[in-house]
Amino acid sequence: MRIPVGLLVLLFAGREAGADQAATVKAIASVPELAKVKRGRTHVAIRGHVPRAKQQEMVLLVDHVIADVERRFLATKGEPHPKITLCLFSDDKRYEAVAAVFGPIPSDLGFYMPGHRIALANVGKSIGNLRHELVHPLIDDDFPKVPAWLNEGLGSLYGTARWNKGRFEFLVNYRLRDLQRALKAGTLPSLDELAASTEDDVRGANGSVWYAMSRYVLLYVDRQGKLGQLYAELRAAPGDRTAQQRILLRYVDETAFRAWAKQLVY
Image (cartoon, rainbow, N blue to C red; front, side, top):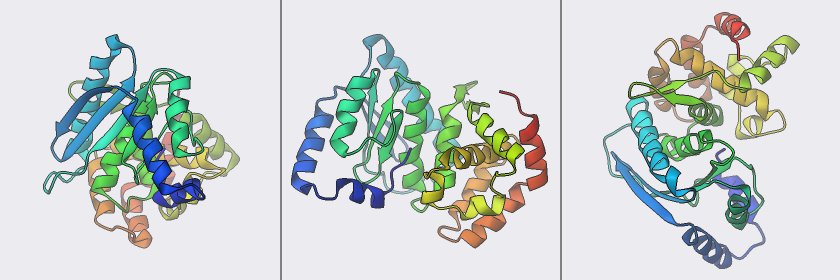
C-alpha cells in the first residue's frame, strides 16, 4: 500500500512536526540495519527485526526486486534517487510499534510513505509484503504521477510472484476471487473506469475490487509480453487520463480480458 503525501498530511494533522520527526528518527534508528543495496539509480537501506537465518535471503530478495523492476520498467539514465529505507518485521508487535509512530496504521501488511521515503513490510504475514512495498518507491521515483491503479497493480503483481531463471514470474493469487465475484455480479469496473480511477477509488471502500481489476489487467498484458511497453506509454502521458484510457484500450481488449479472467483458476 502506498500512502499519498496528501493523506499523510491529514494523518499527521494536529501533531507537532518537530516531535513527529524526532519520534520517526528514533523509531527507525531502533530497527537494526541489515544491509545496503545499491543498483542503478536506486539505493535501499534495509533495516529489520527478522531472524538472523533469514536476513541474507531477504537482502538477496531486495536486490532481485530492484533488478527486475529496473529491467522491466525503469529509466536507467539520470542522477541517483534519494535513499529509500525499507524496514522488515517478522512479528506483528514490532511492526505495529514502529508503524504507529507515523500515525494510524493503514494496513497490518505494510505501507510506503513517500514523504518520508520509508517503507514498512510485515514479512511475518508474508514475504510477498516485502516485494509489494519495495515496488512502490521504485515506481514512484520513475513515474512521479503514476496512477493509483497502476501503482497498486504493479505492487500486487510482485506480491505474488516467484523468482524463476533470473526474473520474477507473476502468479494467480487470492485477488482472483474478488475479480470473479465482481464479474459474476456485473460490478467489475470497465477499462475506461479503471484508467480514470482516483486514489479514493482504488484505496476506498470498494478497494478490493479495484486492486483485483488492476492486478489482473496487468497480468493479462504481462502474459502477452507487453507489460513493459504499456508502462512506458503510460509514463509518457503523465496526468493525462484521456490519453491513458486510449493507451490501455490499445493493449487490452475488454471482451477478451473478461473471458480470460473468467477461466482463471486459483
